Image (tube, rainbow, N blue to C red):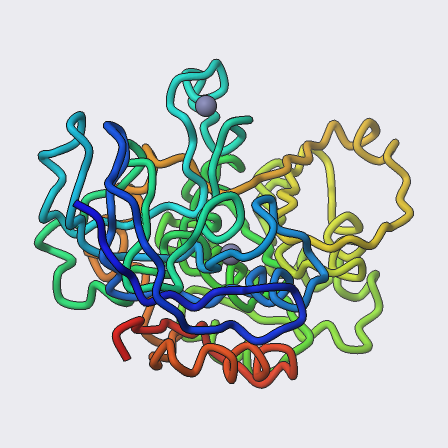
Length: 351
Ligand SMILES: [Zn+2]
Ligand SMILES: [Zn+2]
């Protein structure tokens, strides 16, 4: 079965996405065609669209790596998926290499990212590898569109938390509480950590105070020593080996702040991205016997854990999402560039 999709195509960087028909070929044995119910708009999409981040496939390219949809056709190895509602992870590992077999599929060298390596979800339909697709159970059927943000923002937060070995009673310090950082705060709290969220935007801190953060700290004009004092006061009685610091700001300033909070046997997770460099004394790691982990995406096999937290109502998506038609995607990209989007946009390609 082939499908003619209506796709929003980046013809070349720095030009608006163009809606046009796109022929989707019949799926190969291990592929599936997903009819998109909703696709989230991520800051990375803006980077691709404005040319500041090159895409692996080049252009023309359909962007979008936060899709949820329904399998309308699948190759012979995955025919049983046809008709299922599925989440398409933002990182699609091969499943066969030594990285995948070691449970490190998110670092798979053969991974495909929709809207980067292959055409993505800003379309009525798209073609994806079938193996990594995550089936959505009946318990989550009430608001399938909202789950699109799990494909990247929420699952990236969850994987960072798993990578940190976060446990009940830990203190989670979140630097940058928007987007991924907000979900880190919620999930860490759902798993029994005490969360302090730090940001430079007061509105974000107010929101996250209702969804996981026990304490919020506004970093504007705050001296690093004073911040350290406030974190220690918050974590009173908890040994520093239970400090889990999540750098989610994607800024050099946030990285400096996060690194400055490392203490004896503490753990720092680098979640955000910035091309900018910082200067630091790496020997602090040695002196503190501390740990820094990088973290990228999320392997498909751990998605069910975070979906369970959502199904149980322990992690809320809707307060952080706004819904809109995909026909307005260029407006949303412009709003995002102007820092006017306060919530994550979830777009319906049929409207
Ligand atoms: Zn993303
Ligand atoms: Zn692999």
